[in-house]
Length: 159
Image 1 (cartoon, one colour):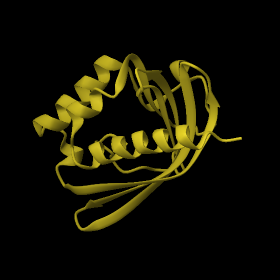
Image 2 (spheres, rainbow, N blue to C red):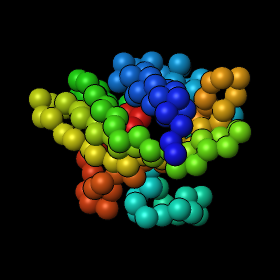
Image 3 (spheres, rainbow, N blue to C red):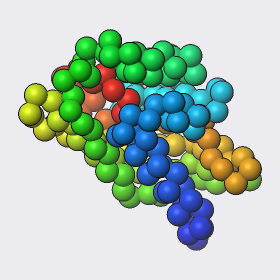
């Protein structure tokens, strides 16, 4: 049976993360992570060995900070013409939960407007969250883009 209280807490946390990214609150977003957290966007949507395969992103703490610094500096050419992103998160399902961690999968539909053109990037997203002091911290976030094995235009922002 699903723990609806936990599901509501996890849903609120993930929706807050999406809002932070859509409104460029990158420093606050960095604070959502554990020190050893990993942000992954695999090329192969079926891959599970991320450390030993090619990915669009495989970011540990230092790389997440560098990615945020690049976005905030204005030097990220691929984002200079992106007017706005909007993430719609849905279909939340707790896959596993214990005293210290919860693993949840959800759907994301990210829309971007670039040069007046609207593009959509649907994905399945799996989070492993650390439970600590009535809060969550992201230990792993894996974004499996639906079209990851096809041509993708430059995505310079954080998915």
